Length: 412
Ligand code: SAH
Image (cartoon, rainbow, N blue to C red; front, top):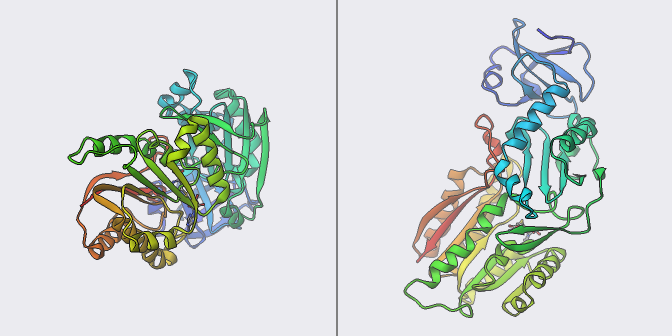
């Protein structure tokens, strides 16, 4: 065994998930720690008999004390890093192809545990990468990671957006700023289905944008085309989309050549960018879109009471359940907005409804939406189960990675 590393001995009976390649080891599964590791150090994980189980990084401050990087007895050195980064980059060749043909493009390049690199998120926005270090070890390695990334994918610059709450659990503070190369412009322009979008990687949500929803943004125009060729003749004037929790309005922008769009979000900054983007694409579209700063719970309640109806309603709330203890309350919240959203769909129209709470399973989410439908007295069909695109793979060994789920419903 390549073992100059400190070792973590697993309690008998707790080895199974590790052998099955779940990457997290909680403190309760650890029998003994040998060799005085420091937070952020690489450790070797063994069973009571001394058999090698895996190698990963350790942080005593975190509930997840070890995150496994490899299940082979190999060193975690630059060769390992280059191999893993290459794998993730090559896994996005289809997305990268568009960028190389000159289209300003955006996609997730490294999806942490799901790319078998726990704690590391890297998103690409045109010629910039945005890195998010979620754990201490990744934070310590970020300059080396940036250098290798730049060598493998020569972009103009790499910017850091490590300002997420989970870092607190690792004893880390926020860290935001340029890591390598050119500073990004105030807004990076990207193209999504032919529309120009603006991404603020310094202050925007997540690394600037909800890249996990890109594929679903693309469904909107087909739904509207379908709606217009249906039995009821529709025009752009009387076709309507209600885009709830709109952020910068990117579901809506895909609808504006066919419909009137009402974007609703609590963030005024996001709505200002949304308006800017509409202007950038076609100033005439401003006449057929609205930007409403409001609480969606309250606004939907009013709309349902006023019997307002839309051809397409999009419901993409933030994470309501951050852990298992919050599931019950979250479920009530999801049910409330789904009930009122269903009431706001025209006969034969569509509802696209999402949950990005990892603690709410796909099954539970469908049950919640079913409960809302039953209370509404309407009928609905599932046309599609929705999730993120191929640039957000989910490791089969890591079910926690499947946080975003959604349903496309036709409602009668
Ligand atoms: N649909 C967007 C992403 C939405 S993320 C996209 O595809 O890009 C969730 C959004 O909900 C955030 O923009 C946040 O500002 C907003 N939000 C959170 N709570 C809200 C509330 N109670 N009412 C309205 N908006 C809210």
